[in-house]
Image (tube, rainbow, N blue to C red; front, side, top):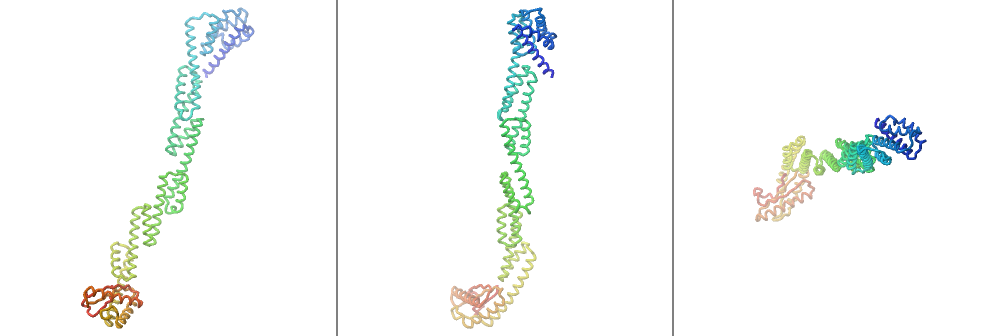
Length: 487
């Protein structure tokens, strides 16, 4: 505050000195008389550097002296003293000129001091202009010129301080340097944050840039872009949280909510890595869901398809292994049930043994064993009935042919009645023949067995029937050309 008051006072005094010089040149006594009170108010008579000027004005005003060279020299010396006190280049330069014009006697030391103060004043003026120019440049610089502009302004401030430019002229520039430094740091942070797209870094950097209060269009554009990225990243973070929430409750939401969330996530441009992970988890969840449904249905075909899809979707290995075990149990169950329906006692027995070793459902194994015993009992009864029928009615053929005799035809009819009562018992028709060479015997025995099989089927027998030609391999059969036995 004191500096401001002193500066204003000195400026007023210099204006008074300028007026006095002007009045002296014009020899305007009335103006001289009028300005005397102002000089008295300004303290000209009390200050050593202006006392000579004040006394000269008093003498001219009172008529004691006229506008002669002596008074002009006194006024010029007073102006020089005042100019040197103010240390302002224009006034010092004008005062020196006035001293020369007044042909005033001035010592070399006074001249040297005046020139030295003049140089300092000119340096302050130049420093001030440099400061103003750099300040204006820094305030109008674009984003990528901020660092250079800041350095220039810092150098100008240093020059101004060295040249004793008043602090009142430096305060704004110093504040600008501080603000530009803050802005430069904030803008670097903001550019890095825009590259990394980190939400917290974006928020902090954006706030710091705003606090720097730069009015540059480039800064406004950068802030607009940062705000756009900030909104975009905020939307992505929110969408990512929704995805995570949906995935954590996949049992209830995955089949309905998650697909729609994924579509929204794609619209907001969520990171591909996050999207891929969510879609992978969706595929896994769908694969598990479909596998659970298939395993519950116990349908082997459905389970095979669901297992293949689950493996492709990346369902965990433990779930796949458990599914494979359920599939193997279901397939073996179907196989055993099919063998039971076919009356294949040996197949049922093999299947039940595998079932026992694999430690599958014990209730099914118990029921299967009971069914096997029933099948064996049924087969035993059927065998006895077939043997009795064949003992009473041998199946005979015409000599060396596969044509049934009338007696043989009636025997097949009797066998058919027995088989119709036991439709679930599979039987084998064995043909025997031993009249020719062995190859011919086997051909003939097989042909006769096929004839009997065809006739049984024609007579309405539904049992599973297989045939075999033994040739002369069983001589103990003797005259019995044909046997029928459960297998």
